[in-house]
Every structure is written in C-alpha cells, then in structure tokens.
Length: 179
Image (cartoon, rainbow, N blue to C red; front, side):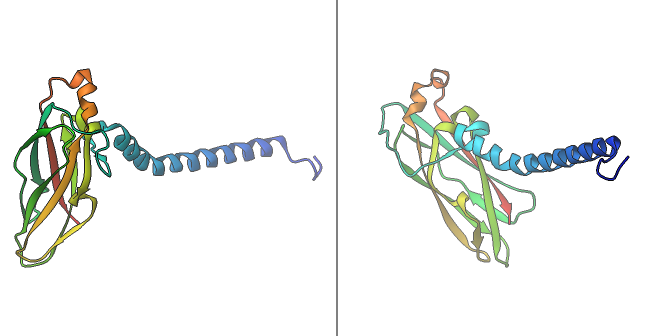
C-alpha cells in the first residue's frame, strides 16, 4: 500500500472509534438533559402532582367549590416544626393566601427548602401557585418562628374535566429538606 491510501482496516477502525465516541457523547448529553426535560414536562402537564406557576387567575371564578387541605412533612432528622395552614373551601378560581408556620428548634441558623406536590395527582395541572416559599431557600434564625405564605388558586378549567367531577378536595403537601 502506498502512503496516500490508508489501509481499509484502519479506515473501518477509525469509523468505529468515531461512532463509539459519538454515541458516548450523545448519551452523556441525553443524561444531562433528562432531569430538566422531565421537570419541564411535569410543569407543563401537572404530571406526578406538579403544580403550576401563575401570575394570577385570568379565567375568573365559578360556583363549584373545592376544598384544599394543607400538609407538611419534615425530612428525617431536620430540627424543624412546621404547622400547615388550615383547610380552605372556596369557589374555584378564588385567589387565596394561606400561611405555614415553621420553627427552628435549634440554637443555630437553619436553612431549608421545600418540595411539593398535590393529590390527587391528576389535579396538579389545575393547582396554580402565584407566590410560594418553596420557590426559594428559607433561612430561619435560632429558635425563630417564621410565617411562610402561599398564594394559590384552582383553575376553573378543572370543572371541564369529566374525570375530575368527583374530586371535591385537593391536598397540597410540602416536604421540608435541609439545605
């Protein structure tokens, strides 16, 4: 073989190497994009009880009432006490603000974040939060009790979903984690 024409086996090996490198790079890219794409999918569809973010209610208020129960859970060992808001019943579309109260049970500052979901999960696409402490990390001073407001509304479009006609109560649940 001359120096101008590489060996056919060398060409095949180079193509296989480039294909393998391309596959590895592609898989790494897909793995890196998986979590943001899943979060976007959940935010758009309400999948897995993911609530929606909203600037306000543009659809108005309808006569059908919905009760919202509030729940709080604390990840293992976090020295925090959380009192959820009381149950509320309002016509769908009503913008409401409730308050959770959290107490740092230590003599040190405590930072926490809260994850959330709603049940039944199929109502997540209709539960809209305008303002929520869960959007940012909260730092609570030693032995301090803070009020953490949530402003929300239930989208009246829920009433148009035939599968949800028997739903009369939604639970908004937060789990608090150390930061």
